[in-house]
Image (cartoon, rainbow, N blue to C red; front, side, top):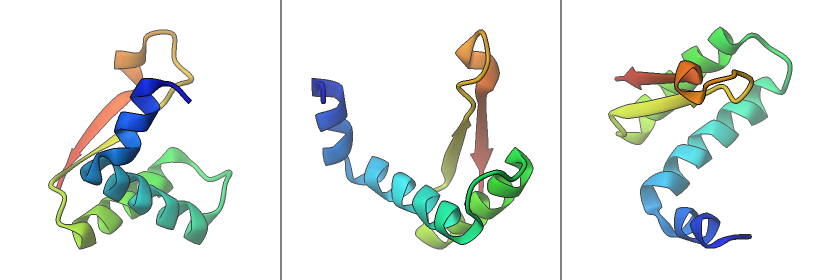
Length: 72
């Protein structure tokens, strides 16, 4: 684990967003279309009080093309 990983784990907002994503993954499991996870993550983030979420697709040549910001 590098220094950045340690910092991210200590950031309460990051932990909360990751927790929301884990809840969605537990409920839906793997293998669905991105849109299903997006819809459910938006609902989960709405229960958390976080106003913005990010969906990140690492399977793109340029990462900025794989970022989607969701405002609640």
